[in-house]
Image (cartoon, rainbow, N blue to C red; front, side):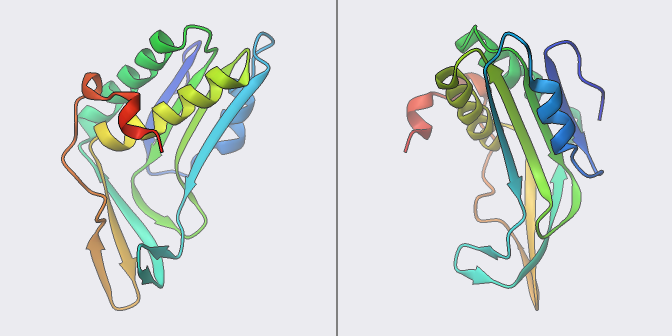
Length: 161
């Protein structure tokens, strides 16, 4: 994982994600809002209980360019955004550990919330990272694993709920 540039921090790593460092980095004097999303491994998946850990695989050559494109598009859609961080794990991730971190700072909360939500939803739909769920007695690729869309095809109306 490379260190952050001035306003964008993207990365793919087999190491633990630095959630606290991401939150501290994203704060700016001009930004009164920080939204941090940390997706952590839970003990169930859909109707399946007993999940013990996840294993993430990625098309690594495509991940950072796509994360960079997402950060750039978020900054275009919400020009007031201060900093954007998009980090994802690969390899084995244990229960309770973060698998993905998204942080967005902005002067006000509406932009920070909207941009952060768009970033995580777009990351999940467009970045080639796949999740293997492992439980007592078995394993399977996540049912959420699907073909990867292009970033420009993502429209916020698709992800509102």
